[in-house]
Length: 425
Image (cartoon, rainbow, N blue to C red; front, side, top):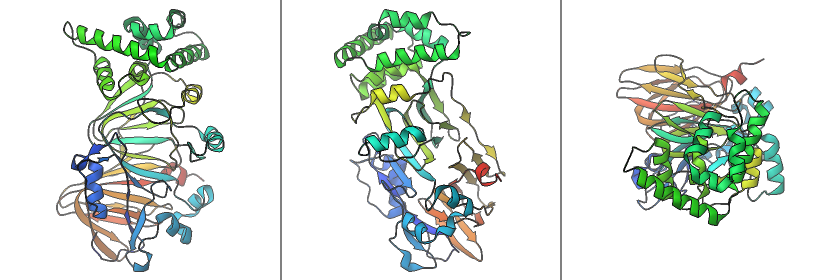
């Protein structure tokens, strides 16, 4: 961003997380944005996984400058908000205190993340109290992923009929859970009580995830050999091909075989997926914008070298079945699409501005963070203007109207508090 003056808007330095599932070097959108945002040198041997924008202590953003008050340079956004709480707006202050309720991210995924779920508020408080070294937050973590590229994930449990097909077609799973457990599921019908169906799924999934390392390794080896043989006779299903890929990434991991229980979702750019508390999921590949409640609580059980808490994960899940809802967003105007999940803490806007166009983000009584993903343009706020370009991260206080224009092209994303919450009485 040029050193012009823009009323009330902060330019931020984002934080990077180099988890081992990230994309390496400049192949990572995260790395490319980081280099432009913070003038950081990109290491081709480093996996750049997540770019964090917000106030979470595990990856705080820092104020580059309030473009009218140079002394603010180097202060964390959280510290700056603490000194200037009015920037949050009255409703946000009353509900969440002196902090942003959302955390904004970019993810660059080269290989599968862990099979995981995020606890609801009650469980988050309990886990944080019992194991604060593992569960660092007492807050829930609903989240939404908005695809930048083609993006793949496992999300939620497959339907009862699909599960019966899996138990019929994948004998290695029956080996791990036992014939009695498999028969229990096969004898359930769609018209049975929902709690009976969930109970059977909970029992079967827990049995699978709790299988011994020796049995798991043997079952996955048999599965791999069988699928490789069958691939010479028929085209493997997408899920079977995925399982073979996961086996290469995480050999002998129970997450490889438990993938059969979860929906395999493929998002096109501009499509989004939201995940409530206690829903199993694993991002697989691609790049996305992600937004969530300010928390970093994760309960893991597979596809990971990190700590696993299988008992907690299997007991906390909702065991809802069926395909997840894919959000395509709705237009606010010809250039801005809004993605509105059923959570108070956040929403995301996607703005694609062609050459010569301009648009306005109206003033709202809550703060926003903007990320410029592609191109360059001019930002007008109040009586001032400034140039914004790829990699810029901006904090806009409550009640700030922003006009954007471009002579080339401009693609940016805005994270803010859910407008349904803002406009409720």
